[in-house]
Amino acid sequence: MTLRVRIIPCLDVTDGRVVKGINFKNLIDAGDPVEMAALYDLEGADEITFLDISASSSGRETTLEVVRKTAEQVFIPLTVGGGIRTVSDVDQLLRAGADKVSINTAAIARPELIAEIADKFGSQVLVLSVDARRAQTKSGFEVTTHGGRESAHIDALEWVEKACNLGVGEILLNSMDADGTRAGYDIGMISSIRAITDVPLIASGGAGALSDFAGALDAGADALLAASVFHFGVHRIGDVKRYLLKEGYSIREESNQ
Amino acid sequence: MIAILDYGSGNLRSAQRAFAHTGLDVQVTSDPRTCIESDGLVVPGVGAFQSCMIGLEVAHGDEIIKERISKSRPVLGICVGMQILFSHGLEPSRSHTQSARGLGYWDAEVSKIEAPVLPHMGWNNVEADPNSELFRGLSGETFYFVHSYAAKKSVGSKQAWTNYGETFLSAVEDGPLSATQFHPEKSGKAGLAFIRNWLGTL
Image (tube, rainbow over all chains, first blue to last red):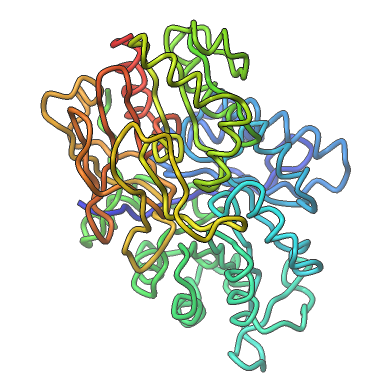
């Protein structure tokens, strides 16, 4: 009897559609985020994350509608990230039915945004998404922007410590080196961040083999986020959960009532 | 009709959708008459203990709850909406570094959980009283929690307990007044079943 490991599928959404390749059976329309969120819920996802990569404001409006529709039929926590710059952006998403928001670039540009959101809605709604890679910085890890293409010239550990002091409730750590490789999470990065923060830590980037999920947990992650391995059906969420259960980790199982 | 007390910004829509999923008419409202006369009143939690109390008092939520309880009309507090039913809370805020006063239905303080990672965020067990109406059929299920503070003393007529670093109260049933530290509206099928159980008691 203990807190369960969380398995979180992440859906990239633009203009109301899921992008990146999706290869899924039992879907009428593989590009519909509402339908995909519902399916992942049915398969045992412990939370759902939408990353809004829309470039236009009309695209963002559409995302609000996607959040509204998802919240009507998916009764597990929903996190929405991408393009959040102000307290009012957060308010809109929460009112549409999001439970948490994740912020990234806007917080790097203006760290006070963290405190503003935490003061208004509480730290528990705020996930700091950190795109980090190995580099010659103090800790050996630096923060990047533009999907890992550019350095933000900030040490990743210093950034996480600062953000936690400003009031984030959770860290989503994306390894830009491991992202998309399916060669495993960056274990060293996870354990380095774990050592300096006491908020929940979600590991992201690099999930391939089932043993990779266990490795990230052993390094100190509380939750595991993955996109492509789920979207392409490499592993079903149930496969990951059964594997972790067999290996002695505590996972959530729902009875069919 | 079920009323969800609207006394500040937050993800009230999330709660509305889960309660509406049962097929009942659900209104998110701050209108005192609607709140007092509804079949059931849900008091969600918004932000920290002290800011939640301030918001509640501005919306006259304290009087609405008092009026309902005096008439034995059911009230369900969720998360910080549970915490403010206790006598006081120790969560610091900008204006308050000391303990903040709660509504005082239950005499216990709401204090920080002793655990290495906070908030307590995710799915955890709830050990409910075997005679609980609200947890009927839900033995062994997990529920979704997001909080760093909790009450740790037994109050009310039936209790449910959860362990995370230490053991705390995860639900209380006490006549018309019930409360959960977890979020039934975010707890999947088990949460919806809990909501149906509560609606069944109205």
